[in-house]
Image 1 (cartoon, rainbow, N blue to C red):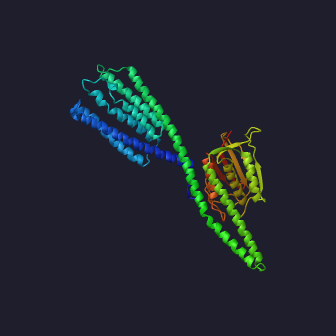
Image 2: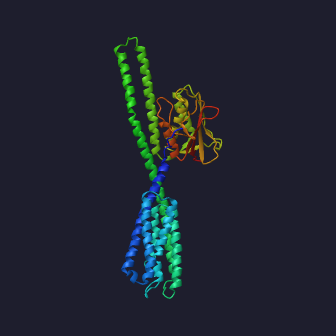
Image 3: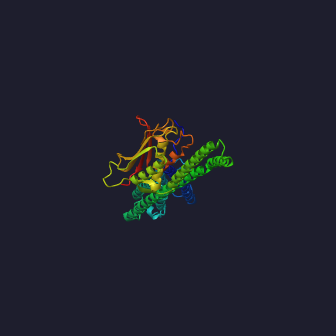
Length: 443
């Protein structure tokens, strides 16, 4: 069994990019939180510190809250820069933002001067709106809603406490409280919508970037294989020169046979490079709906011209598809992408393990329990998959063929997974090999 892990799909890479972006947002929020708490601490000291209203009792409440908030922010920034924040920690950090912001207002409610007219008459409550708005940097809708809910609950608690302790000083009414709550809730809704839109953009950009980078890497690998072409061409030129120099030689027939073999291998190699390059180019395209039946028939015709001795059977009518309605699947690269997948699987079946190929190959649309999926099946009576070529039900891209690289199956798997589907391979008990391709249905 191979020890190589399966390559990450573009979607998995895109989610890693999103997680990195969320951690970057958390690092920025932690920095802002430190700056905010530092400003509150500076204001407290400028207003007299322990000599201001409330004296030492107020300082015993204010200073530990601000000190803990600054320390926790520093730790959170460190953790975010090391990509340690997941969805749960993002929500917890958002709630802590609200707790720190509102805890810093407690001393104002309990110890205030004679000119105090109520919490909502001060600029401090605007911090709650800023705390909710800045949650959008975390790219987490759950964190945005959690921040809005926490700020509403804590602000409600402070307002109730303000009415209880300072009833004779308060000059604002319930209408102002309701207006503040509407502002906080609205900002929470806007932050959540911004998170949803930003997440989609980051996921799409990450997915496309991963596909382009993967294609660039594989195309670069293909271009490096030009050395094999040059070797074959040099051999063919040498044999052709020998034929021209001594056409009547006894070795003429042997040179001609070797030349034919070189040209055949060169043609096969060029066809392989072309197929793999088309597959990589298809990875860059968007997913499109494809007529499965027409594509299967076209791919089968192409493969028949190369393997005339193999009986290829095509079944294109899905049992669970209404009569008269052709099955359709969604795949990256559209018809070109699906044709690449099916052609590669048919060629692999015809070639077998490089020593023995299949005599009969069947490609068909099979029923699937999930109406949102289309199942394509390629089965044959060949030697089946050798031990070590499968990781569970997933071909990892190795090969038993003398001139094979295994890259073709990797490209096919990547194309299917990039389309939101999966590739399942097995060697049935009755012999042969079977590959099931699950793709999103267009029905």
